[in-house]
Picture 1: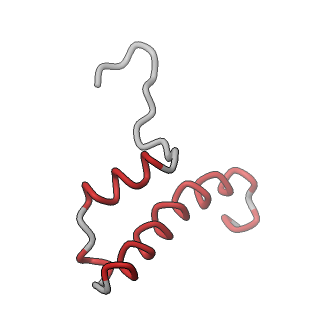
Picture 2 (picture 1 turned 120 degrees about the horizontal axis):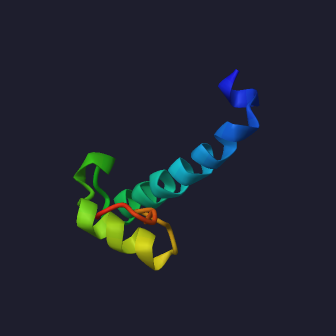
Length: 61
């Protein structure tokens, strides 16, 4: 059911970009995907325009 649900498409897209970015970093570094450092992945995702935190009005960070 989830694959046919339009509400799931944004979730797939949001998860696809970091997964692909992590895979590319692992290939470039010739290391397993588990060897990718989060800070490096985070920096690359931010540079690519990925939203990592959603600020909601009225909520504290």
